[in-house]
Length: 317
Image (tube, rainbow, N blue to C red; front, side, top):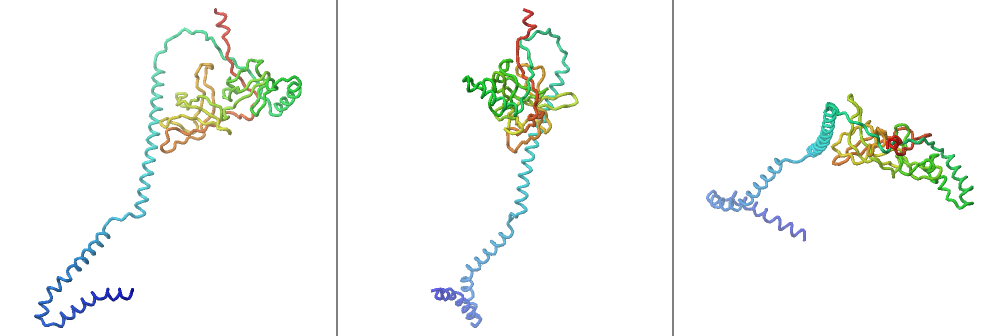
């Protein structure tokens, strides 16, 4: 079958060759008479050949994307992303400069003297010792044997169970759940559970710890306060500061302080320092990692913040 097709395909070429030989051998008058019809017969093929040649030339002259050009396009995309990030950082710096301007304007205002009044509630810091793990385990075991089983008394009412650090102060000294715990000016955590003689601390690195915190940095004109966010423990040895918008200026080394919401203490307390600050492309918030102040594993004594009625206020009545 293939051989038959090959013979059929050769016939047109053979006829053309035969026609050329006839024209070459014919007399001049006969060749002139046959030349015109023969040219008409070949004209469609010539047109096809010319069209194919033109298409080849057009294809060769058309621009072809090479690997280098694709690499240039990718570089342009990366440059656009970097420009967007720089723009967002400039917006954050502009916001900080506006804040500094407002601070200076406030300092230039003439202060108005006001008559002070005695607050009704005043802070009261209670000193407490942090029990070592060995001591805490010994107390738990002793209380459970002495009073827990014999008198049907819940040992948790005396010495708390669990792995959280224990304080040697409890309900008998006015300790209540939720009270803040400090070491000097550093925030350590807050009271979690209260027993009769002891209480447990939920450290700021605990994943269930949450509090408001504010960024700050030192300058020649004093402390510059930044945005406030939500501080959370990461469950390991650090904290994270959430809800800080991408337009805010954040840098490694920034300080993190408590937010004075109720005025319990006259000054903000210290949480720690920013050790990582990342703003991913397209993100609306910063990813901020905080290193707590002090060594939480080596605590020996702390202060528990209690609030009580101002005795001077009571005497003034």
